[in-house]
Length: 371
Ligand code: COA
Image 1 (cartoon, rainbow, N blue to C red):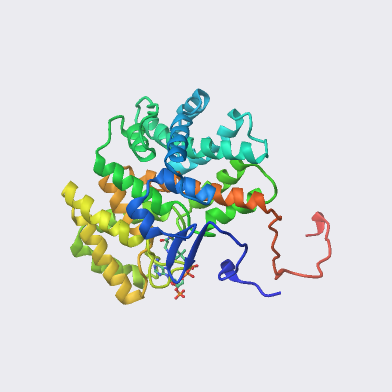
Image 2: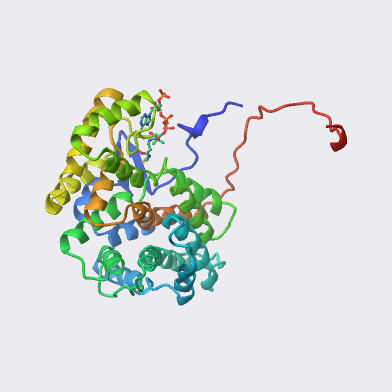
């Protein structure tokens, strides 16, 4: 038996959802650059789940269903009100609330294809509302119901802030959602697939995936990037901060990637958004600090920024609380998780690798009194 730490380079399944080849990311064969410039997030979800872009009628119906299903049960709102919200992270709250949503879905354990697709829409629709409801409740505000005539991106901002969002903010959120939607067999997607490969239900799959996304080596990195930028404070401090971190052999959040070697194709879109949005807010220092960091980390460590690096200053410029950055990643990535979960069900085999045993051998039991 040969072991591969972190399963690096191991091909664990076939998939026709997204691919990373020569540092180019595609969803169902469409280059991410094309989708980021042109597609709505609703179109991308439909593409991921149905293997084709929707026509006008399909898109209208699909978008209407997503908006209709976005309301969350009163029981979930009351449960969120009972969370110790000054102490829990929004990702922990999201993980718990998504698991609880299953208790209020009569089809939760119906494994038919049709029921799974209906649950997929419900999960995709309700997750943003859970995030924004948690955010409002912890600020002592009343939750806001999503509007049926708003786009997915606009509803996220509307239910978060309680006011109609500006077009520039909606466009930025839509693009960020498109860019985060799927990413081949990343850690949270693999977690979701492992879970449902036991033929567990879709809510369990998504709940486990949220748990995996929460970690700082995965989705949790974007929040840490903003923490780091805030600590650095100014362009002048970037150099000394980074050199101290290099000396201490600390990981610089938002840099490096298991699969991309020359660069993450999503980062350039977020970089440009960061430039534009920080100009609009007048806080260009976040962009300037970020570009300086990029230059130094690239030159001295050979590491390019990943998707999380510039998304931090983008979300900050949109006025989003820093600990909501990773939940916002989940709002998008749930579309990819679900596509993979449905693909797993369609051609399932239990995922059960082996471990190479390196522990003690030939031990004999000694009674507790004699140990
Ligand atoms: N800062 C500094 N050094 C880094 C680094 C970073 N962000 N990312 C990788 N490296 C270095 C490691 O220290 C290691 O060096 P070594 O061989 O001298 O020990 C080498 O590059 C390989 O890193 P490793 O952690 O083994 O790679 P991985 O494929 O297991 O991990 C990540 C990939 C993404 C987890 C890793 O790059 C990382 O921790 N990045 C920061 C967190 C982050 O931004 N996550 C979001 C990913 S989208």
